[in-house]
Figure 1 (cartoon, one colour):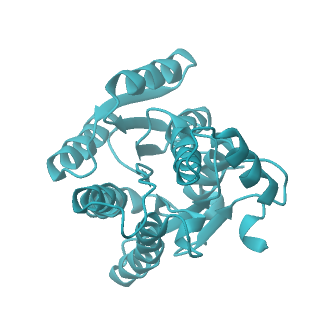
Figure 2 (cartoon, helix red, strand yellow):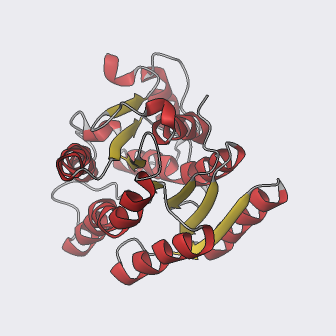
Length: 267
């Protein structure tokens, strides 16, 4: 189940956190992986760990807001591993400011990474994914990292929510466009709840600061108490969902969103 034998995957933001866990999990499932990030040292460490465990991985410096970086990274995947079956648009940023507090430069950064990065990755990987799909029973796959903030409103982080809502609907629209064109590229999104990563910690810091405190412990406990499952998520919780969506086991899923939030949005 959820095997990726013979597949080649490109993961943005894969140096650490959810992306790093996904890269290592995909390698264990049989995929050859391109770990792409701007955090070069972390990224190379992740590649070294994969290769030391018997997997196959390459590192690429990728600023997801730059078209030339995407072109170089896709070319690395196809030249080193001969094809590209899976794209995971994982890279993202969080800026915990409200509508009236955020600067235009901060807003542009949020949009550039969270939305433009997903668009560029999809656009510049499409032809390689289309080509690989021709020899695959279930085609190729794109998995976009959205958020539960892209499904329900956020009173504290409305602008982050706006970008992830864009990713949610872009996923559905890209799935429909590629289906119309006969590309056989499945496009699905995954929607994490609050996950214990550096980005998750940024949300706690932002919430604490709104109360005039630097102590994140009470905020973390308050958020934990709202999760029906009784704990915060960890990167592996999301990596397993990404692996499923990328695998042939999800071969009839297209334009769908997988929510992994411990029941938070069910309340």
